[in-house]
Length: 262
Image 1 (cartoon, rainbow, N blue to C red):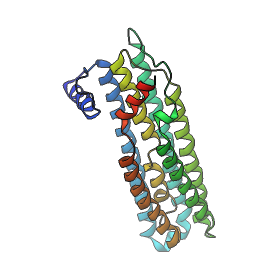
Image 2 (image 1 turned 180 degrees about the horizontal axis):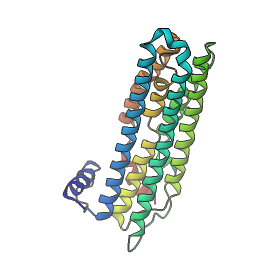
Image 3 (image 1 turned 60 degrees about the vertical axis):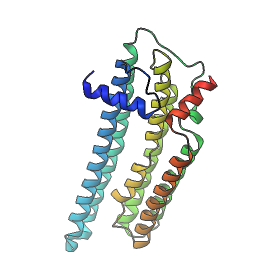
Image 4 (image 1 turned 180 degrees about the vertical axis):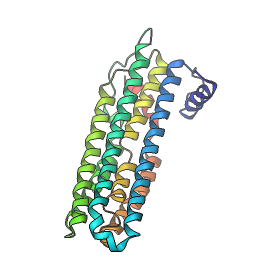
C-alpha cells in the first residue's frame, strides 16, 4: 500500500467512527478500488453532459439548419445516454471483480451469521426515494411523448428506455450487493464490509443519472412547460435528498445495527 492510500484508509475509518481500527491491506485495496470506480463514474457522467451541451449548442447556433439536423442531434444524445448506462454497468462489474480478487487473497474468511437484507443495506427511506426519483423520470419521459413534435416524441422514447435501463441496472447492482460473498477476515473488516455495502447501495441508487438524463435528451427541444417540469423535479429532488440524509442514520450506525441483530 502507498502512503497516500494508507492515509485515505485511516481517514475513512475515522470518518466512519472507527478511529482505533487498524489499517489493513484488505481495507486499503477495497477503498482504493471504490475511489477509482467512483472517479470513473463521475468522469463519464461529466463527459456525457459536456457532449450533450455541445450537441445542443451546435444545434441552436444554426437555427436555419435546426430541423434537418435534429435527427442527428437525437442520435448523438441517444448514443451518449447508452454510453452512460453501459459504462456504469462495466464499472460495477469491475468493482465486484476487485472485491473478489481481494477476498481470494485472504488466508481465512469471516462471515455474517445472517446476511444483511435490503432493509439493512439500502433501507426503506432510500428505497422509497430511489423509486420516487425513477417514477418522476418516467413521468417526464411520458410527458415528452405526448408532444406532437416528432423529435421531442423520439427523445421521450429514448429517455423512457434509458430511465428503465437505469432502474434495471440499479436493481441488478443491488442484487449483486445482497448476494456477493463477504470480504472480511475479522470483526473490524466485517463491520467495514457492511459499511461498504451500505455505501455501494446508496451509490447505486443515487439520483444523479436520473436527474441528468432529461437534460441530456429532450431538454431544450421540448416545450417550455416540460423544461420547467424537468428543472422543478431536480430542485425538489435535491431538497428531498438533503432531508433524507438529515433524517436517516449513516453507514456506521446501519452497520452496527446489522452486527447487533446478528
